[in-house]
Length: 183
Image 1 (cartoon, one colour):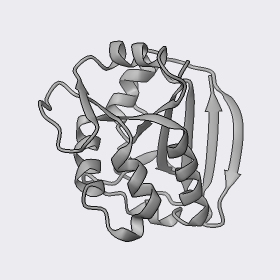
Image 2: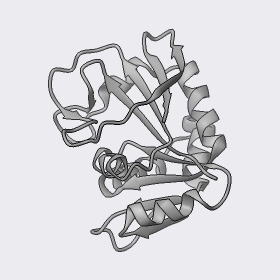
Image 3: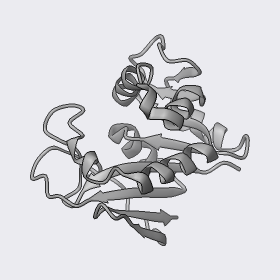
């Protein structure tokens, strides 16, 4: 059975995006060789990447035009199958992409097929819906060493109470910390 895993980078005060869409400047505070290796390990274990509409569009724009220095990460991002969970997108522009209008039903089915992991990158609205449907098996959060003060929070009100267990903490030389929790 596949696991559904959330991966996000957030600030110490809980923001996953700055005030404007795709303001991810704080990601540069934690990016380095360690986080690149962690990202590759995740991508190598993935059977599929899962995105909400806005994250899909931003990721497709970025990764389809990735520069050579993006290397192996770009290869995985472009070659892995992708599930776009959206009621507004009708066609995809990133290879190996499929659209579903019913994320919770489709992901429930996909979890029962295959053995590789399903990763949700970014996609705060989708992640909140999947949390409400109790579909995540693991949460992987990288804490960036900054207080942003304002922006868009990853976790919003209305998420059901869910106890999680700490699996692992990985401090980064950049000052960030990767936290892994399972249900």
